[in-house]
Each structure stands twice: as structure tokens, then as C-alpha cells.
Image (cartoon, rainbow, N blue to C red; front, side, top):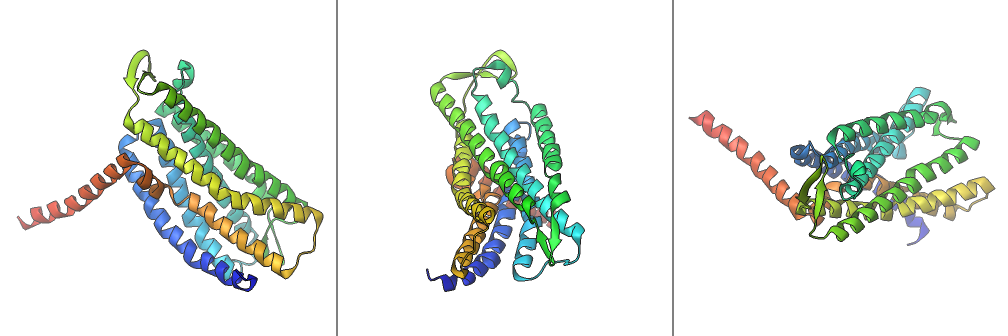
Length: 316
């Protein structure tokens, strides 16, 4: 692709691509919440539903601001408060959603663990406490964004040495740690479930009780493994461009116009993929899980049946 067309492709992604993610992502996330509500007493449902709620908040807050600031100046050019809150809240919501999914991966691992005490952690009350801790943790850890994010020539962002420090921090906490944890827990859960095969597994609230690993357990693991794969695949671009920008900034390299255009295009594309991680879960589940599709059909039938029943009653 000629470099001259890259700005046009950037604008297309920033406008139409982001709008599509915003609409279909939020619609899909709402369906996930409705479908998982029937399993609300299970730890995995609590983790995934909470993460989905955060995804809705994240997409609703972040994408409109991203689109506006791409085509215009800052929404409030002279508002330092808005500048700080924009970066802080965006980062907090993104990290919360990411690490709540890590907890869902951990839940699948401990479900198949032979350690009773570890397996006993798989309870709804423990899930709620873990979610609360994740929320509090990232609200505190991300507070440096409130302190050091500032405005320079009416541009909101991180500047100077803090920009390098923040880039390293994001590289580790945003990309490396969640990816590694997801892969580890996903692999261990898959490995242990293969060892069980058709065998029985201990009941989480009774050391002597025994139940069968259900098809839903296996499908849920497949859903999570697929989502892990998509997450790792889509973060490769962001990881690569972040590392490249970090190295060039630290070296203070002079770049040609063509190189800057290529970097900007890759950055926009990688940002699109990051947003996609918060928008694609419903469609991933629909593709890989027969049980999820069955539940979705039941939900649609229930929604379609209620208005018809109500109209019949009114006519009578």
C-alpha cells in the first residue's frame, strides 16, 4: 500500500471502524449480561458479567472521545481536569476489564485443581471480594495518571521523562502481565481438564462430594481459551508499535514523514484491535459455543413471546 493512502485509511478506521465497534460491541455486551444472569451464582459468571459491564463503560466513555479528538482538537482545550480524568478513567476501566478476565481464567484453572483448598476458592462470595479488590487496586495504581498527565500547547498527554516511564509501565501492566497470566491459567486449565477426561471431579463445597465435568464446563473453557488467543493476537500490534516508539523516543531519533505516517497508521490499527478486545466477546462465544447459541435462541424467543402475549391479554 502506498504511504500516501495511509492517512485516508487511518481516518476510515477512526471513523467507521470505531463506530462499528461502539455499536455492535455494546449490543453484544448487553446480550452477554442478559445470558449470564441465569448463572449469576457461579463465580465464572460473576467475573465475566462484571468484566462485561466494565467493557460497556469503557467503550461508551472512550470511543466517542477518541473519534472526536482524532478529527478535532481536545473537547475542552483548556480543561486540565478533563485532560487528567480522560486518561485516568480510560486506563482504569481498561485495566479492570483485562484483569477481571484474568480472574475468569484463574477460575477455570482452580475448577479442575486437585488441591481442595485452592478449589474451595471457587465461590461467589470470593469472586465478589476479588472483583472489589481489583477495582480498588487499579483505582489506586492508576492514580499517577491524575498526577502527571498534563497539557502542552493545548495537547493533552504525557510528556518528558514521565512519557517514557508511563510507556514502560503500560508495556508491562497492559500487555505482558495479563497476556502471560491468561496463557498460564488457560494452559493449566486445559491440561488438567484433559487429564480428567470423563473422570469425576470433587465438588467445590464438599470435600467428599463428586460431580461430573459437564459439557458447559468444557464449552466455557473453550470460550475463554479462544478469547485468550484473540487477545494475544490483537495485542501483538500494540506491543510492537509501543516498543518501537519507546526505543525511538529514548534515543531521540529523527524520523522521516513516511516513517511517521506508517507509525501513526499502525498505532491507529493497534488501538482498533485493543478496543475490539472489549467488543468481540459475544461474537466469539457465539462462534465457538453451541450451548451459548442455544441460550441466545432461548432469550430471543422469550423476548419475542412476551410482547405477543401482552397484546393478546390487552385484546381480551
